[in-house]
Length: 622
Image (cartoon, one colour):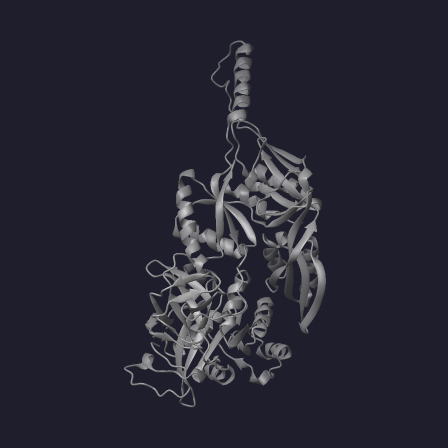
């Protein structure tokens, strides 16, 4: 829509098309769709766009709001997006519906929370076969905290394994909505989509406006455009934002003159004015999303608001890993690629790092393991880079004996143990949903991973919610894989940061040919150091190829060697060319070979494949 008014008594102006009408603020509905991964959130968004005619049948595609190839392949929304729809309700009145599509993974929880702040309502979608899962609950509580009106919807009712009546009872117990009033749909088949739109109009409240207040708008997402700089996705709360205004970003302290403002329909459509309650975008011209962060408040530079909108905070990386190019000459290409990715992803942080084993690379910070996986795949696909990723670690706090508290995100930065008073590690609050029959194995897994029991709840008769606290270092590698394996895929998980807590932690070093490989170092609990060191050494023995000299592989913890294995030298028969003759000739050749191997061992480089670094990630907890 190109131009809309919000004053309730403004008459419509003559228009040449549907996008030129003024819109009463009471006819605006801002809502989001929240769900656990793979419960049909993006499919429902597709159907709403189709039914409202926002996207023509010719342009329609699956997951139309998921623009990245990785989003389509993995079936999960990675970046938030917004779209404006126009719908004529059963009462004959035209409504403007602003759908703010949120990321679907726990790693992007902060983006979800900001997107929910921009809405008045949320569609809570639950799979009729899977039922309520971890992120269903997490997103529901986030929506309740944001004061949203929640509309429960049961999706995939056409599946053979669907249990809509049972799921309706569970949702009714959680939200208090009578089971017979919970909508039941099949987004994929397009069944019963019209009642969803009617329910949004009836139950989601319209936006409110502080009349006469200076302009204020919330940035709930942003992306970088090569021609227009950072495109900020905004929800206007107070006042109007016009394309001629000079704007001020309150948290960043930046002033910008927008290239254009507009709405998503779903492509970007320029407008002259964004009114209270509307969702749209500002082309800021800024050169990095670092300067235009999610959660910031936009106001008018000449008539600024006195207070920003509440809730701004900077997203903090939780997982760190080293990225090194396989070919040292590609270091510059890797730096350029990371800089370009950071333009679209302010949560990605990186700084140069050098390693004796891997030469030059970058220490990168991520929101979680899924975020790291996405960045690594984008580097390899979009920029044709071959990279070695070191074992992920978390940010530790080190209290020195002189009382100084410092943070480290790489085991290689850990000071000498004589200077350390204690090491603190991040702990997480974890909620796990699972059928009762898998209760025992999951409890055993949590205990093995140093989990601390907090409480448990029973949201439905045959399902249990376990509330635990667990170190982040135990979660980031393969915990979710094990959880899915032992529960046959039925368990789901959500987590959030709790606190830093002191632990009995030591640095586990791997020495190959007597040289420590900093890319394989890890900080582990003292009780697990011996077992992990032994398993890792034996695995590296299988993965590191034989050299022309014997290669010792050692694990060291707390300054002591705790495990060792040797990769035998390649066997070459140097006496094969001899035919008879004195035995001393053979002995002389063998002695020369032995001396050469000693010299080669001193100066030779051991080729370490990527699989050897990945072995650090795959330590079984059996």
